[in-house]
Image (cartoon, rainbow, N blue to C red; front, side):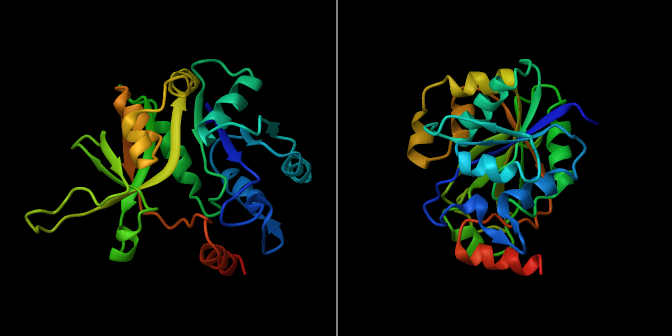
Amino acid sequence: MNDFVVVIPSRLGSSRLKEKPLIDIAGKSLIQRVYERVQLCSTDQIYIATDSKKIVDHVNSFTDQVVMTDNDLPSGSDRVYQCAKILNLSSETKIINVQGDEPLIDPKSIDMTAKLLDTENVDVATLCSKFSNEKELMDESNVKVTFSKNYRAQYFSRSIIPHNFTNQSVDYFKHIGIYGYSLKTLSEFVNLPISQLEELEKLEQLRFLENNLNIYLNVIEDNSIGVDTEADLKQVRNFFK
């Protein structure tokens, strides 16, 4: 299968880790680790979309598949969209948006997301996994998701959903921030105004739901670690030792 394009948005600025994409992880930068991991999926159409000449110069040391985008874009989705337009992709092109801080992402998860896009009525494909412990569940930075019996997303929240009012045994699911969509759907999304729920929760995926775009999920076993904090960085560095 080689019928989709992966775009990895990579922004130089970070509120927690200075110049995060360029941080060293066992002799290679974070962005190179992500790129090499993505290379293990079933497409060779992989691009890094960045706002920084410094990142472009670094990425050119291991690939020429890098696209310079504006530095004032409001989100990773807007960066992916601008990259797709620069590449002159067709409106029906399937795009997988892989976060630039996921050096342990499972390549099979990328293929799975792309395959889900072939399903009828799927506007957006994404992933989730069961929460493994209460500490993760309580963390507001871990986004929760509920879905229907056919795995159509119902809601995303930083709060714990569903509320277990009746104190039953229940599984809670964590959203994994990989997205698949056609360029046509992405174009529609970035041209919509920020929605009310999106503004309240600071979750852009709610803009899809509020505008009647269907998000479907696959449930996976997630062993990936996103690099957001010094603790995450230490954990990932230990993995690559």
